[in-house]
Image 1 (spheres, rainbow, N blue to C red):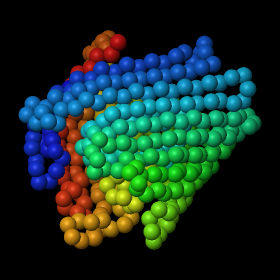
Image 2 (image 1 turned 180 degrees about the horizontal axis):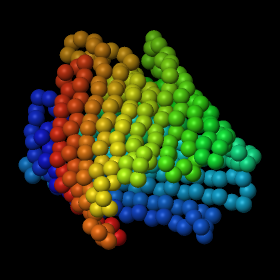
Image 3 (image 1 turned 90 degrees about the vertical axis):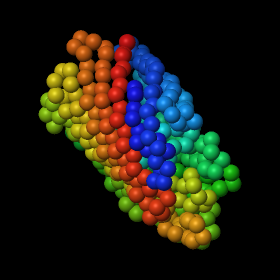
Image 4 (image 1 turned 180 degrees about the vertical axis):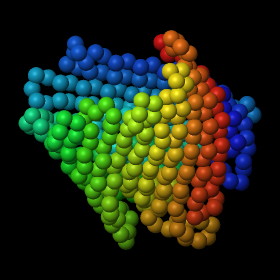
Length: 365
């Protein structure tokens, strides 16, 4: 792919435009579910970005992901996941969450931060069929964010979750879950505990609607921060894909939570993510994709800005559009994509806007 970027440093006071080229190679593997009790999925990618002028920004990105499922003759099922990604720009390789349902308490990456970082993720889950319509499951997951920049704080989190689910119809399931996360900052930083629970519903074997809709509570305790107040409130965990017609699929979601900051020791933030979009299958060859995204990060404690302590809240808006063209009876595809991102903050030094226009092609074998 080739991209024009009008603000490669993603700052408000040092705007420089440039072109970059980014070839990428990816591999995917999937075992047969019909002949094996074991199901294995694997994927990997490697990309290198070349800037035309700002060559100090050139970087490599790479990663891999493995998913394993075992279903024996009994009512139990084991699932495991492992993944690693080294990124510097927006993470375009976030793994799907169809194996272990811990998305609501995973560490959130900071896509508006251009920093070289390693994202590690691994976990295991056991699900047991209690009756024809009910199931219980337990999961453990570890996530971490590690930065090359010594001024940023690495983050790690141990995640535990239990869930009970009941099938109320052929295509719908009601569930209740409880989760606990132990979060830690590196370099002697702070620690925090997050507890949360949801009541909700999700679809099953539905051709038109795939999604989950959970609503509950969250309780956040920063025990390492002296005099810190506990945070509590509503927790939302929702995502869906709806086939509205033969040509249109609608996408959307909303989640929120708390986690420690990568910028400030012993400080945390409350985040809200929401997104909406659609896929329009114009013809067999042409497909249009539209998406809007909003994220808000509200830091719990005031932060140092100059010589003052000030409140910090960042808001990120992004809109993007992509047109795909697939050759008839071919594995070749071309696309053009445009995106515009705006970051607003109570601290002006963190504000910027960025526009990108990308032309690309991909071939699958």
